[in-house]
Image: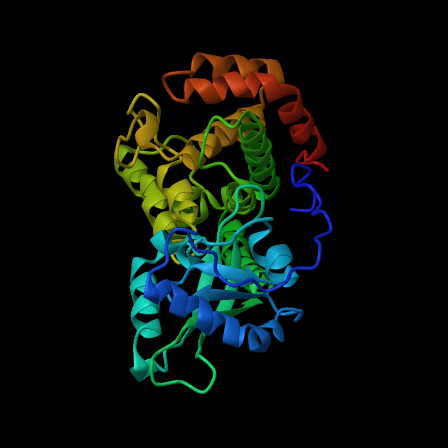
Length: 366
């Protein structure tokens, strides 16, 4: 997001030279001496790549990073020191364990030319996740390709922005379709997204929840407005019924949580499924659809639950008058430990003036 003020500007980086791998001074085994000799013979060839504007790293045959260029540091890892980390410490291996296995097998097999091509993701605490096409190619000793690679070059093509824009356009079309079912929700969903962003950025500053990073803030801002997207499958006669719903009608209405989780399940973030599926669960286990309680409910859904209820209390609908901020805040406080995560309720009262300002700025008559 453009207002991610917690992200500092990168400092200029000094020119980096390719370096041969360091070894323990006391480790004088023949294999290590041979490896050092092979890299020394090839280093001039590899150096030619290091001033490229394309992000690039060099790795030894154990897939440890031993060289990198400015473009890699600035565009991909945004760190000042990655030497001797494994390439798998840079990627997100646990998002796709099979990919990790495939990379390792491909780079050790002459059937694939000791190479691999695919899509990887790189995580950062203070920056959005990066998605990139990666090409890993072998480096052979000068004039000797029979003994296997002495190391590898990995080139990256950052496609984060392109993919994010495509994804957002696709899922925003679903949101627009859901608004056709319930045209009273336009400003409501915008406000819920903004409340959720405020809470997530506050939690990031507190550093109380390890899962809250820059990507968490980006995702919840975009996905919180989709919390009720499952209502696209709710019959109009139930969704727009004047008067109380029967128990059977409530059963149908509650299914919007499961429907929403299914609709958004293809979005590449677990939060997309979690928010619509769990935002009607309650801290004391009395919610729906699964009667989850406390920390069984994902943090993103607990945040959206509070944001959604606050805004619903403030809104004027055909069947009710909207409450004042003071009345809504009192009801939120009474729900601590019952409906809402008590810790989040405490944070709400730190942020309450900003919640009120958001409601007023995005008022339904604006």
